Image (cartoon, rainbow, N blue to C red):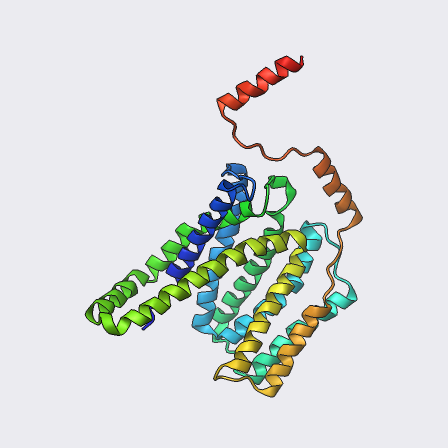
Length: 319
């Protein structure tokens, strides 16, 4: 039997990612990015928004259904595009891109209405889905900001290390508050009482957790690399397309098949993501970014007294 321990599994994935980032830095695969307050304060806010989205997700599911979350998430790129225009110096999306996002939203609504339909239990449901929608949009835009050159990271292993390290304490707290330690103890008692029957099951669980940790490392690092390379809106569109592709594969493979109409709407979502075109930076924003990169010094790493003495001696020799 499988114990429902989502927070514990997430914590293990965070820990595996932290160890992978440290290993990459120690082995010289990536530059060393030490923990500095000037960087950490940005990631504290980012992780706070991440935890808030998890909480809002739970609250939405209490008063609504998962299909409502699918529709809300598919509409997030529209708001992110406006946030990028207001705060990140991007141009507004072209007509082609607005059409692409409209197709994605319409496809999500069509899929939901052809399957389970929306369930909104009173004003509380609308409140939580609105908070979820706003926080996810702000988090997506802010995620682009914290991978910028102004923080002076040597590689994207730095943001990966910061985010996953800071995420461990709140995820552990969520697990304790939801009573996962009790579920773990019950599962352990069952394994002790019937070790032979549960041996194969436990091995399968360990294997799945290890695979999920390996995938978590890849998703964390590649996610930040993608954020660095594309705009916040484009990254959000990719995220929505990935979720829709997963839903499509689930409907085609597993027992609960989606209807032909539902598959067609999901295909429309993927088509909308395919025709989306990233908005360029505004000319003024390009100039300001170039000026910052020319004049800005990266955040300095703390240096030891020996290093300072060596630099002073070199400077005297040059004089």
